[in-house]
Length: 173
Image 1 (tube, rainbow, N blue to C red):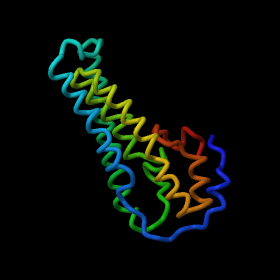
Image 2 (spheres, rainbow, N blue to C red):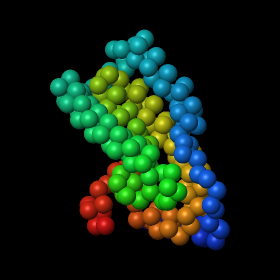
Image 3 (cartoon, rainbow, N blue to C red):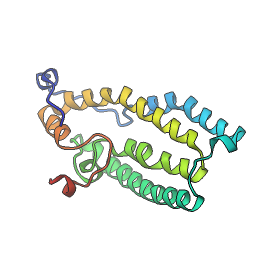
């Protein structure tokens, strides 16, 4: 559980237009060298970069993560596009499962799926780098949302996890 930050609680609510793209472009740009290095290692040293898993298990897990990841990303993106421009805090749909479902789709589901399907542990290392970049940049979005929505965002932040999707009924909501 995250304790409320007194500095956030005392900020005035801001009503300027929010930027729809968030920190995604900065994360993607910073992640590009990590992804390129992972792909290069897989290309030039396939025997060194293979995952130590049986093919059937690796492909089954990768396929399951890919299917779930694509569905969760599509749901998240569609929900975001339908509701973001109304200017309200998104707390329903995939945003009830985690506060950052579009980022979660990539970090938790799609990049690991790609690593399994491509038989490439370097993609898992690149995914770890992506998570660290997420941690580095997400504070900007948190501050923007706290400034805009004040106590409503703080209550949402305490109730819903940041990145790992958990259905609300499993949290007891």
